[in-house]
Image 1 (cartoon, rainbow, N blue to C red):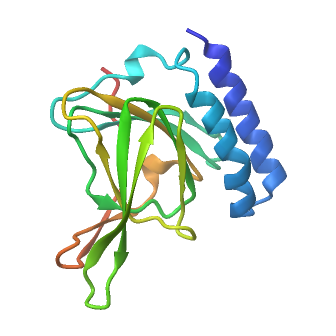
Image 2: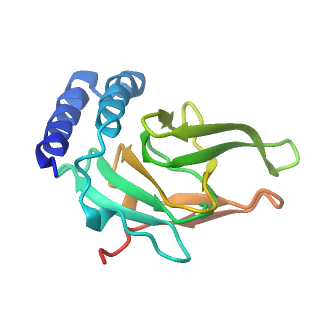
Amino acid sequence: MNKLRFSRFIEHIHHALREAQNDEAAILARIEPLVADLVKHDDWLEEKYTQTHPDYYQQYCLYICPENHFSVVSFVWGPGQHTPVHDHTVWGVIGMLRGAEIGTRYERLANGQYAPVSENRLEAGMTECVSPTIGDIHKVTNAYADRSSISIHIYGADIGKVSRHVYIPESGEIKKFISGYAPLP
């Protein structure tokens, strides 16, 4: 277990945020390569943060910045599991550690409904950014129906406490939610 790799990653994130000075484009440009470097190595994530649940994807908290400037979580997807259509309300960078996931972006139509507009498959080692500025409404699905997948997400706040939204595509209804974190097994 290479705990030093994750510790250095956290140090680099703090440094990148200081350099970017709240400029979202600069934040994403600095953080995405750090996430890409982290997820190209599968030797640092503790086993307790990789456990699936038979019915629900799991969001495990790996780190919360003491100033709440960012958080890092592992998303563990059981076979075929998926999120509802949702947003984040803050910037985020997703890195695929194991397996693969499919992200489907949604946009609001003139009639108030939400429709898928693009799909992106992330394989191990790949990254993707989200934010209200560049596109923040999506659904994520484990690409595999027969095995788990794990992605690492970094967000511009303590994502477990952020008030966000779930979108019902057919009706256009929007519901508030706060995700929290999965308990450790």
